[in-house]
Structure formats: C-alpha cells, structure tokens
Image (cartoon, rainbow, N blue to C red; front, side, top):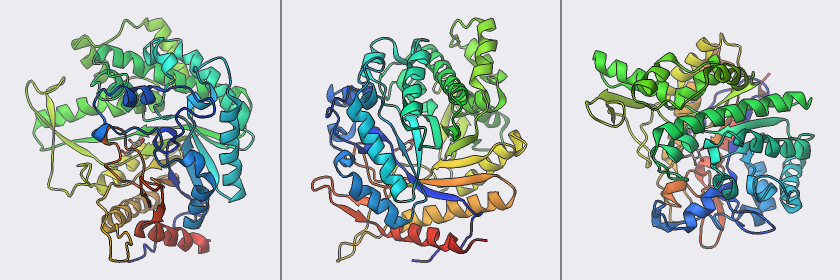
Length: 456
Ligand code: BGC
C-alpha cells in the first residue's frame, strides 16, 4: 500500500459521513416513530435487494462508543451524520421524544470528547410517515413542519454543533421519490416531483434563515448531489441533451441555491412537457429569495460523472445514459476524478470563488478481497480515493476554496435499494455478528490524515 503524500491546507477537515437510517437500527425503540423508509422496507414493495430492512442495520444505536472509538482511531477530525426526524418528533410535528434528544446528545458529546467535530445533516431522506400521510414534500405546509423540526434541533444541539446541513441530496428524495418512483413514497408523477423539489428548496432556505434569526454562531449549508452530465460525443444533439439533463436534474437545485433562480432551460423544458406545477409567479419571486438565502458553504456529494447521448423517444427528454471506456465501481458508476476536478472549478467560476465548499460525500463501493488472515484488502477503494483526493488537491491548488472532505462511508451500511449488497465503508461490518473490522483503506486514510500533522 502506497501512502498518498499530499498536504491539504491547514485546518482542512478530514472525516467520514453516514446517515441515521443507514446505520442506527433500533427503528422502533425508545419512542422512535415510523419513517417512510421503515414503512417502505416493511411493506414489501419489493424494491430493496433481498427484502433487506435497516431495522437493525449495523446497530449503531447500541454500539455508539465502540463506533466513535473507531472514528477516533482513524483520526477523523469531523464526522458527518444525520438526525432521524422520527427519533426526535415521532409524528414529525408535535410531541417531542426526550429519549431521541438524549441519544443525539450522547453522540455529540461523545464526538466532542474525542476531539471530533460533529457535522449534522437535518434530513437524509427518512421523512416521518405521519407527514407523508399528509402529502409529504408535495404539501407546502412541509416548510413549516421542517422549520419546527429544525428549530428543535438548533435549540437542542446548536450550542455544540457548529456545522449544519439542511438536506442531503434533494434530487434523490424528490425525483426518485416522486418521479421515477424508485424510492419512497414511490410516486411516478413528474409534476409532483417538481413541486416536491420546490418545497424541499424552500424548506432548506427557510431553515438557513431560521438559523441566522436564532443568532447561532456556526455554519450552515446543504449537501447537494452533483452528478454532472457530459455529452458522449461532440455531436450537437448530444451536447444539447447533456445541457437539458443537467438543468432538469441535479443542477436544478444547485442553480436555485447558488444563482437564486431556476434555470430558464429547465423551466422551458418543464413547460413544454406540461411538468410545471401551477406556480403563482408572484409568490415564486418571494420563494426564490428564501431559497437563495446565503449558505455558509456548499456541500458537494460527488461519486461520478455520467455521459449521455441523444436518443429519440428515450426517457422523458430524449436521452440515455451511455458508458465511456472508464472503469466502474460495483455500483456501475464510472470512475471519473477529472469530472470531480471540473465540477469544483465550475463551482468556483459560478460563485467567483466566494463560496466555500465542503466535500460532504465521496467514496466507493468495492468487492472485498480477503487474505488468509482475514484482512480486508480493498485496493480498489484506495485507488479510487487516491485519484479523487489528488483531483481535489489539484482543484485546491488552482484556487478552489475547499474546507473539508467527508468520506462516504465510515462503516458498511444499508445502501438503500441495494440493501446490504453494496459496501462503501472503511470499516467492514459482519451483519450477522455485528463485528466491526477495519479495512486496509481505513489504515490508508489514517495515514493520510496523520500526514497532515506537519502542515504549516
Ligand atoms: C447518499 C448516501 C448513499 C451514497 C452511496 C449518496 O447518494 O447520500 O446515503 O449511501 O450516496 O450511494
């Protein structure tokens, strides 16, 4: 194993990331309410591999100290995790569950005691089922529901948590939830997805404003999933569909937050296809002000770049995803560190370099190779990380203001519709015994972090 001898700027936050539903388990313990992911996994809608559920997952809820010790051993300076809305407000609004507050206090205090900076995501897809029953993200009231939840979190933990993210990956819970129907609530109605997207953005902006109004002294941003689409060839039609694909999916959220408006192209395409909800454009102008409430940083979740090509009649907007000749992860994502560099440079250009960036996720699902001694030699993961961290380092040298890197993920965990089939962790988890074992990549990452000690 070769060390990566690159030094990042002083104070650069190296860490790891997880989310509540994917690791906590204890799905109905200590007063926790039902989330849409609990419901989806239980009702056998048949979309999760092997009918897996995260009822127990890696049982982080009952392995807190052991897990935090492992993060400490790796040398993490920060740890990004999400709060389960249903642990704190079992019905989404109303009655508060003190045991949920206690659990997160224990987690936050445990991190601080180990000199690890807590970085909290408010919403990582596990909407309270009770709120889904009232329309979920398509009901504009959700902005107020989210504010009630955010206020509780800021009040309860804001004295110690100084790094916040409103949502994780809005594209996923709005478009995959309401348009492709691949994720709960499994609806296939594009117009509803656009409405859900708008409300998610509004809830984000309103929570940022609330944080400011409460006079809290930390930083708040959002974790955006940015999967850039590039044209497969130089053909004009490929270039055009790549623009459409970017504007109407991941960059819809980015444009709204960073530029303060929806892209004209996205609106035009939605209009032409009758996907635009009946927005009141006066209200919309006000909404955009809220949505673009200035964040302290933009969180970037980058895994891959996708090539697209024009194909008449394909999907909604006449394009299909096509593979280039790049290696792929076991999730079939093309490995494209250059795409990472290009994305970071784009953000720098779009924001005149004035918006700090945190890499809130980047990582790799690999097949594990074991030695006779049962050591887990995940060389492919190390290779992926090395390439992406090198690209990141180059972007920083070229003036991109990146403050931290939160590797996905600390532990193997429940990978949504892939169930437990895909492993992203630095730490291997045996799902039968719940035994944790550090993979080679954990040691490699530890050494990289250690190497930063002498940065002047
Ligand atoms: C999500 C994580 C997920 C990871 C790997 C991101 O889309 O935020 O929850 O596990 O990617 O697929």
